[in-house]
Length: 297
Image 1 (spheres, rainbow, N blue to C red):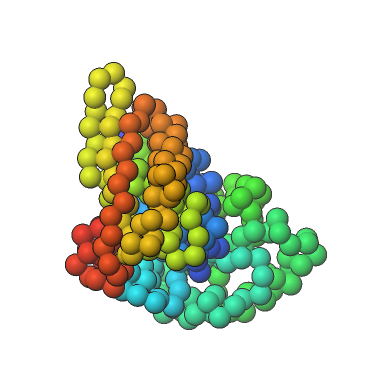
Image 2 (cartoon, helix red, strand yellow):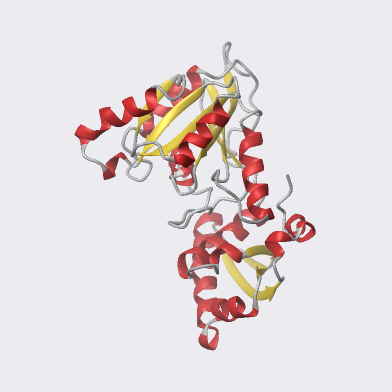
């Protein structure tokens, strides 16, 4: 039974690529839900994550970074992020601790078109001297009517604990959308595929990581606690496939080892992971394949 005055709602985390949206999401939820990388445009999907408290339920939505797209997949990602602004109760606009750049100003123009309350989060304050914080806050204050401005570090956790209370302040009264023990609405296969893609992002360079899609084709629970997982890493060119496999299969083995270890830690099962690499030429510009890989507006 929900107490009287129970609050609930949806919160979009938006910002340029690589400003720390996924790191903040994981920090708020208390466990890893979204993959992280130092490469831009890591997040491709809208991911719902849930914080449930006795007085409120916050549904956080990590969104792809808003950027100038170079292919149809990029167009899809930006469309997802901008559409989310019109679907939520609160917007968390995340920026780095620095002066507003062209990308930030573009997002601010989009935010001016919605009536949703916007909270500005200035992330990565661990990287700037304290005396620079107040001028940074002032440089943003006149750009939009922000309900709150919160400087924090998603990486270290500094000042992150004030965010849930501020978010609840702007949420409407409403029902509990998800069970108490649910932290994400994404299925197990999605999380597995994203963990594999994260390892590709960490271990490869240049265009290779951005040209990759991962599809988990089969998950089979076998004896005891063993789970067999079959997944395919798709890329756009034979040369990229060769890099992903590596000399003597060493790169693919390393990707599989790291992904398997993290799956076992997250799901609490022994994982038998088999990976294959296949080529789908120019898939990021082919709408039918984009949809086949699960990127649907």
